[in-house]
Length: 122
Image (cartoon, rainbow, N blue to C red; front, side):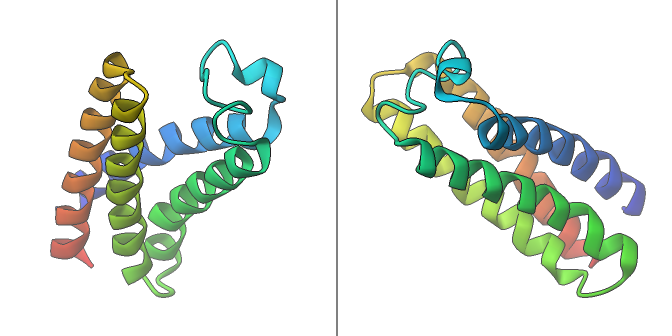
């Protein structure tokens, strides 16, 4: 189970470090081609907050289990990602963006597996 957790958590963490890092570091104009809602529907401080949550969650999946300090935080980070993606799917549905839902559903599934593995392992 430990190896499975690390594989799934690493994939999820890399995705959210990249995604969150983009939201934190890029301008509204740079994000517009990928995320039409960034800076328009959701103001840039909100986009930056979402990015910061994603980066902190990615760190929460990896750092506590590696250091052994409060490893249960990895479980909470994974649960946070499930909640984040359910809310994101609802947001995209409310805007009529049904194509984006596939990514959200996939990320919910990976985060749910991470929750299960963290529950078993932690």
